Every structure is written in structure tokens, then in C-alpha cells.
Length: 329
Image (cartoon, rainbow, N blue to C red; front, side, top):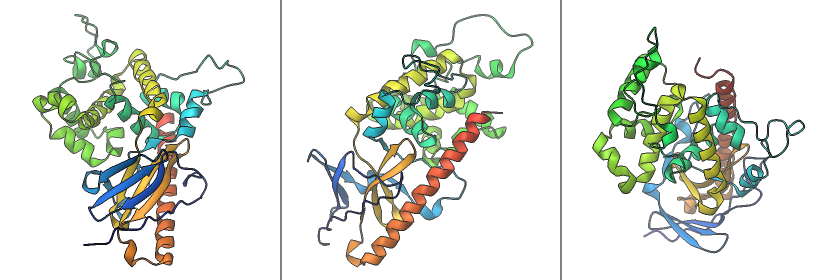
């Protein structure tokens, strides 16, 4: 039986990558029960089973590849959103007028909450999980009409059987996914974790319909895939609805959030992560093999994790800007 691991505080102060103050985490332990135990700033305690947490390997990531991690939003970012600091032009427009670009879903969410790829995915997932974005909302329903474009457009042919602007059944969504895959136009779907796509493909319609009760987080991940599949067919009204819903979810995030723990398997590390306006930050790190590590070993691993987080923030930012300037062309 292993001895209960001593808490290792490895808060590193490296610019925007490592937080100067923890929003949530006061202490972390990786204990003998293969769990990560977290004490929050208010002294409440939480236990996370390691096998149920998000797992990743630094060595598996390639340069130039967008990276998603589940992460809580920092309270400092929430306050900036509440303070409307992401206005496009505060000199020419009052604080009561938020300029929002609803041409694409990327633009709409970015001009409301700022940030890049990590913010886009985390906030949209959170909005889906908490039902701020409802896939059967009236605003996403396609108007019933016998009208047909002449000549028949490709987008009309592909969506004519949809009752909503987002494919409501797994059969319709999978059909669209196969088409986009065949045409090599899957775009942002390729930047989601492979597990999201696997869940989407391996879930039939009956199973999907049960997920709102059995596993709402899995349903949110599948719905995210559906939204990205349909994003090029969304009009400004639908984009505005989703963008506003994500904003409302983000503003309520701080009241509902719990620590986000990512397991870096090749580093034997549990990392508490959060998102600020610049990207991912590290709140705290603990190691499962602490007994065998010297101070130098810990310092080296900390440095590797720091450089890794810097790298993914840089790549995510670069790819996000590319998508804003050249969306689905």
C-alpha cells in the first residue's frame, strides 16, 4: 500500500500561463485510492477518480495542432466579460452597445466572450450542458414552407429534410458527417478530441434521446459535433441565439464551476487548469510518483508542462485567427 502522497504545491508564475492566484484550488493530493483530492479556497473538499478524468499525453501532441482541454473560466475573465471589456471599439460606441459579428459562429462567440479555441469549445459545451443552448429551441427551427430555390442549391439539397437548422436526429447528422468527410470539408471537427467524434458515431438515435437523463455531458459533446456540422448553414438569427446563450452561460459560470483536472499520463501529473483571456493557465500540479522524484526532477517536469501550455496557447491563438479571417472558404 502506498503512503498517502504529500501535497506538492507547484504554482509557477510564468506570465499568463501560470496563475498568480488560484480562483478555486487551495490544495491538491494524489492519494492511495487512485483519486485526486482537492480542497477549494472555501475549504470545501472534492474527490475526483483518476480514471474518470480527462487524460492526455504531451508526447502525442503535434506542433501546429489545436488542443482542447476541459477547463473552468477564471473569475478574472468572468469579471472582464461582465465589465464589457471585449467591446470592439470603446471609443466610438457606448458600453450599452456591444458590437457583435454574427456572420459566423466563431465571430459571434469571440466578440461576446473574447478568447480563442479553448474558450469557444469550453463555453459552448458548458452552455449545452446547462441547457442555455437548446437544440430544439424555436429560434433554431426551420420555417415550414413549400418554397424551393431555382436552381436547386447544394445546401438546400443537404438540409431539406432537417426540421431544425441543426440536424436533430443522429441519422441526419451522421449522413451530413459522411458527406463532409468524403469532401474533406470537416473543418473545425478535425480539431475536436477524437473521443467526441467516436461518441457521436457510436451513438444511435434511441441512445441519444436517453442521454439528457443518463449522461448530459456526453449529450453536450455530441450536440457540439452537430452544431459544428451545421455551422455553415446557420443564419444570423440562429448564430445570434447561440452566441447570446453562450454569453449568458459564461456569465453564470463562476457560480457553477468546479475545478477542472487533466491527467497528463506521460508526466504522471494531475493538473488543475483554468482559462483566462489569453488561454489555458495552470492552477496547481501534483505527481503520482512523487516519492521517486527529486527537487530537480519536479522542477524539470514543471518546466516541460509550462512550455507545453505556452505552445498550445500559441497554436490555438494562431489557428483561431486563421479561422476568423478565412472561415469555411
